[in-house]
Image (cartoon, rainbow, N blue to C red; front, side):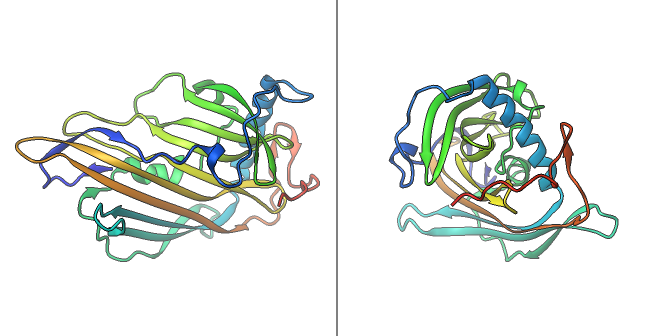
Length: 280
């Protein structure tokens, strides 16, 4: 997100309205720092990478609806004073290629900031976060402990990029991994790097993505909320300005497209396997 050019200021840094400490959120139990039971941290990470790789491939076989709502929030009323909305159906054409069809897009009334290419890519690629085997070498994962999230028993990991490679975006935050199936069920963090160069400023706020089990076996992202305050420093006589942003993304109506397709990964036939027991 960058500031509207007519506002003579540059983005210096962001101050975030971070999601509350997860221990204090409703539905989150206390963090237990003890080691995993009957397995090792290394094994959990390895299994997670395999599962995430498999389910990333599986999600590419599904159609779904993506609903994006992005607001600038007035400091005076704490209500939206500008809004961007778009509802998109992710489907397949007759050749089996994935296509996007916008079904609802009212006029964009946001005036204080402008959406950037990174914003659009984050919505499509980064907010529905996965951490596959191929991506694991890019991150330092720090085991933090066990935590109950609603009815799920999870392992919690700090997740930080090892190196920021130009042209790539990474998660800086935490992931919660289901203890039984070693799949990511919750993510909280921010996409990095944030571009603070004068005249090239770009920013995205911290976000939380929730996952639900689809068809009894796939943990797919279903809801994201991102919220933060963008701080623009004064320049050329203009006053500094803080712009409060709030974004929600919903992923709904997951349906399998290739009903006769079997997903293979790591020598396993995933779709012929017995479905996992659904979680509450």
